[in-house]
Image (cartoon, rainbow, N blue to C red; front, side, top):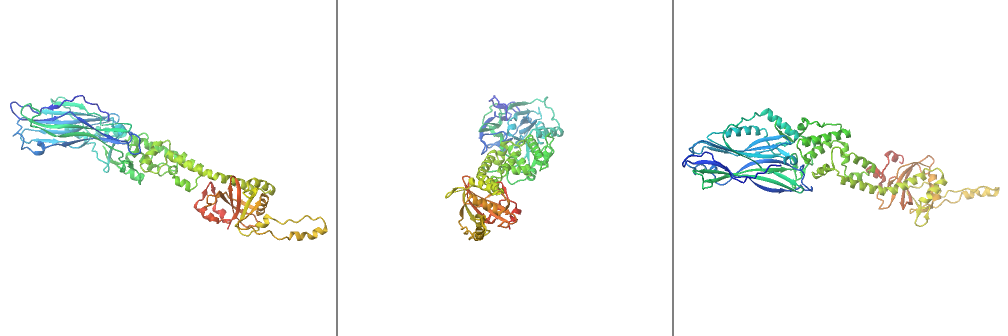
Length: 615
């Protein structure tokens, strides 16, 4: 609040009734105002004080001091005040040009008439302004006028009555019973109601009276990490005298009239112990029911927005499945809330719960844990991040929401999600590379080409390139015969032809042991070719593979295959080479349950219908 300072340091002394001789008179005296400053700091988690952080309002309050005549009664007073009437009043003139807000209010009113104890002193606690956002509130200016009259030269009480009639339009209360806010839109609203409901006070320009007018210093200032709240204090004295000794034994302090600012970070939300508003566990309907005090009466927040004459008035029920429509109305809601005078905490709490009904908003604020547990691909994550409501919300808005305990993703949160997704994608890259090469081999109908493709893809520590450890956990389906099929020699003469059956009937190959057997690329090509593979799934990491790089894919077989229906093929790899291949059941290591728990992993999703073909 930017307010002109005063240069005068004089004591304002106004005599009520000056009597001849020793006639006792009473006077109300006010000293020049003094200012006491107190500091306030940025809210926790914020680096500096922003005019959008707080609301401020001005309060006037009278604090009675000492054993003055008004408290102790009339026993110590002179027998009577024999001469005329005396009235005195201090009236504030409050205005904020930017918000089109102005009002007058009475700091105190003193009235005395002829006779013993015929006086009144009225000094009530007053809210001089509604809650105003700090950036606008510091522009509020306050002047004060001290009026007195003697012998009914001016009807001060009538003047005060006119002031109070205008001031009653702003019956302001605190949070819980409704709040009165002031922004550009609200300021115009109040002004129109004042014009409609208040008659212009009668002019007192022709009256003879004494008055003093001054401006108070700034009530609030802030810059960087420091803010200042200035309390202005008037010392008010009661002087009973028979002469001109103003500070004799009959001068007593009635009390102090104080005008001070009060700040608050939110009008719609409760605050935590550290002073930060808490916006958790609400809904748009709940926050929309917040009562708002206005010159026209009490309405709720949602009605205030809907009845606004703002050119950007939002539709509070947009097409929730239409991202541009929701984003556009989000921006309108933000503009209206700001022009109504709400600060960044209240605005962003309302916007958060407005957007909560939109799927794109929920996707944008997906948790990092969920992106990892559901094995989302980078393209999906990037599509979520792209709908960031940038036409409505700035990065700072997300920071404000997060400070209030709301589950939103800031830029740094998204960077961490992207980094984690990239690292995980790097883990799947070798698997995908091996998968592509292996699938190309399995889909090749030419056995000779299959062998040439397999040779650079296979390697064991014992036999080197072109070899692989082959294991069978799929049951007896003739794998040994596929590895070493019997070959009948080409007949050359009758005698050789007669012994040919003996060669064909040679003993079958030995069974493959449980630990497997190292085979060549040619032998593996024979196995793949002889299986008559029909369909292949994508490859997924083997569940609980104990830190080893291993993948598993499912396959079905054509009619005539030695393995009816199909099975699963596990492959372990390192350095871009397959070292082990094992035929497995699809239930291996609870693989089928893993498909149900994690339908997609590493970009691989296997339809349940594929599994059904294996049973």
